Image (tube, rainbow, N blue to C red; front, side, top):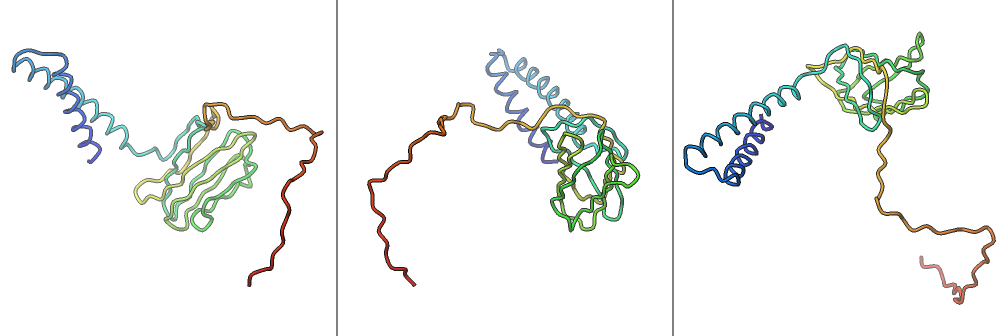
Length: 190
């Protein structure tokens, strides 16, 4: 609900500024323009709110963006299977006490997940040459039984300063520096 209220406040502020800046003359014209713009923005925001609030499907397929962590909802006591396009080589579990992740003995492309405790965790999975990151969220009302990763695109985002850093050339033939300072030993303080 707070999301919708925030959108309403932003829409009202936007409409007020837009109507003022476009210079609509006359109170009736200004009010009509403000109502039309507000209604349009609120209907669009309401549609976005409904789309964001829709729970994930219990059985789904996805193309995974490798630069993003995907959320998987699990309920305690239920099992979930995640299938990858390549055999799973390694699974790293953020909280082994909360989530149990097992590579299937039947298919090395399948990972079976069970939740022991309702504590959020994450999984980093190496399948083939790619790394997949998932956030595991405990939920009482939403559970994803089967998630198929049918493909992947992108790569981990490069987080770096856009300015080039200073480079220092290191030569294998550098002379050892002679220090002008002397090392003075002192007693150890106990």
